[in-house]
Each structure stands twice: as C-alpha cells, then as structure tokens.
Length: 381
Figure 1 (cartoon, rainbow, N blue to C red):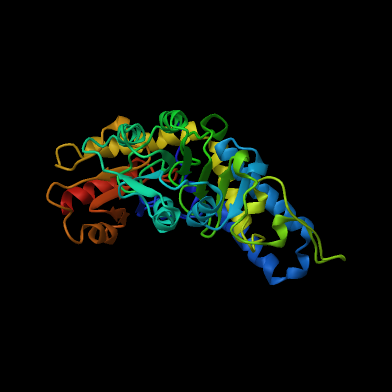
Figure 2: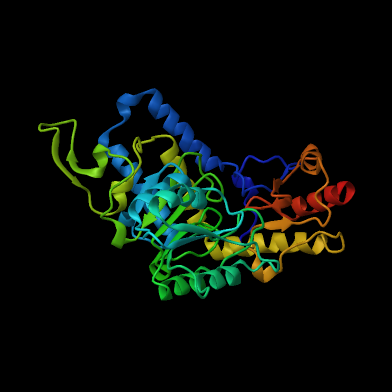
C-alpha cells in the first residue's frame, strides 16, 4: 500500500480535502513544471520546434503508459467531450441501431449521441440506475436484451461519477464483442488509479483528462483510438495533423495527407508549453506510484470511512460494486440542505452529486482526514 504523499502537495494540516473526483490539488513538482512553462512563455525566444516536439512526445508517452497503449495510438486533446466528439465523427453508427449509455452518467459520453441520434436514425438507450447498485449486471443485461435493435456502441464511464459504481470493463468488452458492437470508455475516474490495459480490453475509444485523478491542469486530456479507426477524419483540420505542412520552407503545404496513427486527432494549439509539461509530470508521478499501491491506499481510506459511518443511516454501495477511491453516501430522506457547505466551513471538503454526498480521497489523504470527516459529519448530519 502506498504511504501518504501529503508532503508532495501544498495542503495545510487542518484541511481535509476529500474531493479529488472534482479536481485535484497540484503537487509541488507539477506546480514547478507550470512555473517553468510560464517563464518560458514569458521569454518565448527560447521556444523551439524541438522543445515542443519533446513536450508532445513526453505527454503522449506518459498518457499511454497509464493505459498500456502505444504512444502513437494516443492523441492530445483538451477535454473528454472533445474526444467524444471525435468519436462521433469516426465511429460508424448505422441507422436503426442503438447506442447504450448509463443512467445519470456524466454528460460527456452521453450528449454527443443524443445530438446525433435523430439525424443518424439511431436510438440512445439509457440503462436505468440499478436498485442494487450493480452497474455491471445492468449494462450486461442491456447489451444482451432480447428483441432489442442491433447494438452499435456502448458509451459509458467505467466509474460512475455520481455514485462511484465500478463497471467490470472486461465483462462489458466481452459482451459487446459478442454483439459485434463498439465500446467507448470515459476513463476520467479510472486511468491512473485503477489498472487499465487497452491492449487486452480493446476499446474502440478511451478518453481521460488530467485535472482530476492524474494531478494535472485543466485543458489537457488524452484520447486513445484503436488502430481500426485511425483512418478517420479529425474534428479539426490542423497543419500538425498532415504529413508535411511547414512554415519554415516552401512549399508550405507540401503533403496534405493525414499523418499515421492517432496524432491526426490532436487538438489545434496542442503546443501548450505550460499545461502540457504539467500534465506529463502528474501522469509520471502516478505511474511511478503504481495503480496497485494507489488503489490499495485509497481503498483503505474509503473502507475506514465506510466503517466509521456504520449506524448513521447513510446508504453506501457494497464494497464489491464500488470503486475503491470513491465513496458515495445516499440519504433515505434526502441530504440535509447546507450540509456540504457546513462541512467546508470546518475545512472538510466533499461534493454533492445528484442528491448524494461524494467523498473521493487521493494519495495526499490520511487517517487524520478520515477522522476529521467523521467527526464533522456526526455533528452536522
């Protein structure tokens, strides 16, 4: 189990920050990378094409390492919704087919298909929130539903953002293959914390941002595209997506064929000398700690929280159905108004999500943070 890494962050001892699923603090090393990037942009005569290429390669490789992908299969993008928009352009959804999404899933893997459904002649089927909290069983049942229209795509978060439900991606991938369907995974709450191997899983598309669990900035995200879809047309038309468009020589647009691999799907203005380095450093830190050690630590902390909440009347998903790093509390009669704010006044920070309280520790949290939450919660709730 990973030891607490609080010293790597700027978090006062009296602050119990248990809200990584909203946004993470930046480690000192990531802050330093950002400050170095700002200094470089302040004196831009030090920025060279070679420097930018190294930055892109470093970030792309760091993202690929977290999901066991080849770097050439990973694109640099600004957000999960951007990645899903790329998927909407390159994944074939036949008329008369259906796309599966989770009930109350985050908007990113859902809205693109709702927007395209009418014009594309397909339907979007929403998997109802399971009464027993078993999102995997509910998803498998929907995939295999007798008499349903042909399944084109399963577009889901692998960890439900609101209740922390964990989906068995291996089981879902096997079921979608049997149905000759495609799989898009929003791995926002998965990559870097839990093991993820695209070589084995073989999703069609997988996306994750850096500003939550992998300790990076806003505006940086990464898109894995399976090789079978890498001939698609990117969302943006940029010089970097083409084989040879160079401002340094004539002819300027020498070869407009798309580059090989997923790099053709890179965002415009990808050469962000501040945020790209920050993203790389955060992902590298996560990779060095390792998913097994990280998830063991976070599972230990959420286990302590669950044990400490016994007898308080809150509803918690069974351990086998929830992610180890997200603990979501349901309230039979609704959450007390102002409870989240009252906790924050006591320097205990969690998030309200769909009427539930979401608690999401990270590597900087320890048993003292658990005790602070339990003490404040008992007094307030």
